[in-house]
Length: 342
Image (cartoon, rainbow, N blue to C red; front, side):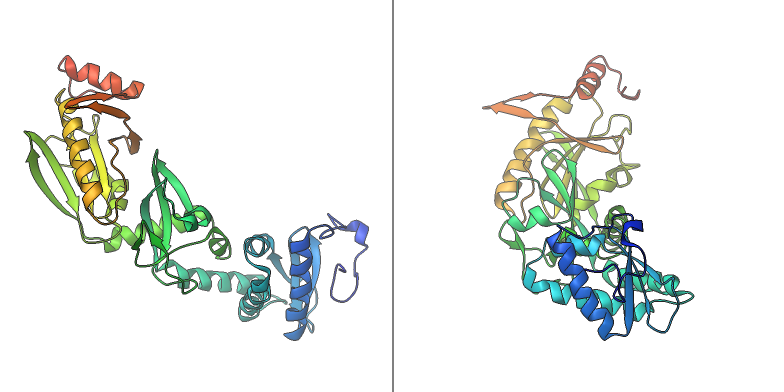
């Protein structure tokens, strides 16, 4: 494959990697397919570095528009070969619509990428899912760990490929976003997550209700939305000003299913009994309600969600707390409810 569609305009040895894409099957196919599409649209190209091209109009002088091929190459690597021509065609269409080559070409390409991101960002949603899900589609989805046993995955409410994806056998109202798809949007991964979270925060209307089980005061945060559990990310805001909530102590939390977060604000050493109550409540909800997430107990404090491993024999509950939570328990037992946790 030449370094340019017009022959080698530069000495191959002067290129940062003069042998690229030799030995890389995907990159070789990428450049071959690009050549066909670009020439057919009146564009020319030249390699300037590994995964970097300049693309411009045949009637325009160099330099052209700088193009980063790495995201596209990764999308191809994760896709069937039969899909490669279509991926390249769509990619070049976006380049062409953005206006490649000539003065201002780079700016127009950035505008095209912006336009693509503006189209795809609105349907995105962040959803909390169990980390031990058997759904094979989840392994290739854009995701990150929230806490032990919990993942935050990005969902699009606009189907990407027409195939319904189910979580725990339950339709999720959208589809998991593949990592390869997100790489083509021209923005950093954290920007995708931020947008997905912001959309959930804007659209989900949460309700709160206090209730008591076996003498333990609990708070239910709930809604009909599939993204209710995502609001655990903003739990401090939901609890602010609530009787019994002490920011330094935090709260015990369970997320048994997609429509419910149940919490117990930590005020005193009664938190140990409350832990047992919450675990039993979570187990029942987890087993009987649609969209199960977790039957585990968590501690929310300082913006962090930490799993509290436990074991129960009959009515006896044994917690295996972290050092920080054990220090909180010690302080609560001697009556010091308000100082912060070290």
